[in-house]
Image (cartoon, rainbow, N blue to C red):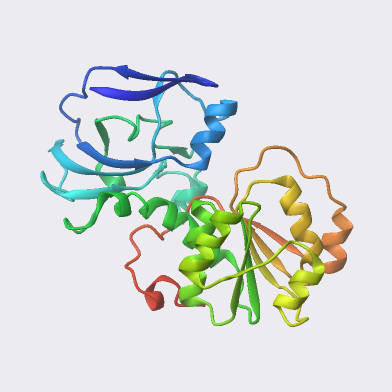
Length: 299
């Protein structure tokens, strides 16, 4: 079968490799129907930050059809269409026992710890698979994992009124804006240097496009302080700009994968009580049923 395998930073090869054999106990073999390219895949390709073995087959945003199951698997059956949880957790550490698997002490990811979806077939633990509607378009189903990431970031924000800003209109930022447009009672603002991408997200969500400067934000919020934002660019420059337009007491959910380090005066955070909240992967959001009241009951 063909697979796209990462041999090292900048070294990605499409190769013919042996198809996986029969799955072991607790594992499931899938025909991969679709797999998305995550920003973290691009980051790993450029930097090699998360290469723990090489060559490896990446791809953690995937959907597939079950073709074989290992001994003891009762949660899925041959013929089921599934989406995969990207997180590979230990199940034994304090965080896992507290149902915070995304903070597992030895957390890894599909495509890193085990081969992922950039291949014709793959094998995954049954515990990571969620059965989906057989009629769902595979291109839509493959978005389940990034949607869960966006939903987790949105849920990290405190309840607030007024406006919320999403910086970055890539996949995660665009999905965060979409979720907010369906669940947030105030106005949704979006910012991105890519004009076409920003306009596309605005068209789909009804969000208002703004520049990251005080005057533009003041106009968009009718001079009310901006108290909530999602940072989805992974750009240090964009985050610095964002910090300059937030109101005192604001909270930012950081979900982008950053290239570089942040150089800020921490007194600004102290004196203005600005909260920076990391948002890593997702908690229990992946199997959440659709529907605004179900997705974000607290917003």
